Image (tube, rainbow, N blue to C red):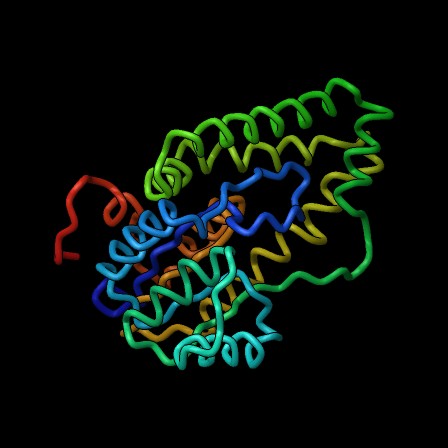
Length: 258
């Protein structure tokens, strides 16, 4: 299948703007509803529109499609106020300005048993303290660096920097450190990665593939920690043509060219 007959994907990794506090290391986002940040959000939306997506997929549970689209339709009719999260600020706003009539939730996030990530950290702290220190220190360093960047960078520049290949690779290296937690017989880190993290991202990839057709251009807006694996799965599938975030968020001027 040549690129002319493939669905085109733009994967946009983002920090969690609404501060849900669900990760092991959480970046405290500045208020994106503040007037200055709203202007910056609009610039990002204007740039994402240049990708000309036919569908926008977001990090919301696929099982909650009806509820999410009820919200979106209420927003279109002026009866719903957007929250601070990236689903609303980037997904809803971009879709609305492009005249879309629905949003596509593609997430899966269920507990099916096994080892929780917190237990992996606890095991490392008890039995492999040097590895725990590496996990903890790296996580805190990323949070501190992100907090400093937020004080001086626009949302466009924050998103652009977070989507550079080196930044995505560094994010993924944390999961490769998690894989080392165990003793060869009790592979606790690998159990979490296989049972939850890789499972989740493979399901997200499969959900994206299910909503795609060759003529589509799909903008996928997701937490940046997912982007490394989603990029790998999408490339290795042979089903998609993948475009870069830098093509749309890079540079100082907006143009109408793809």
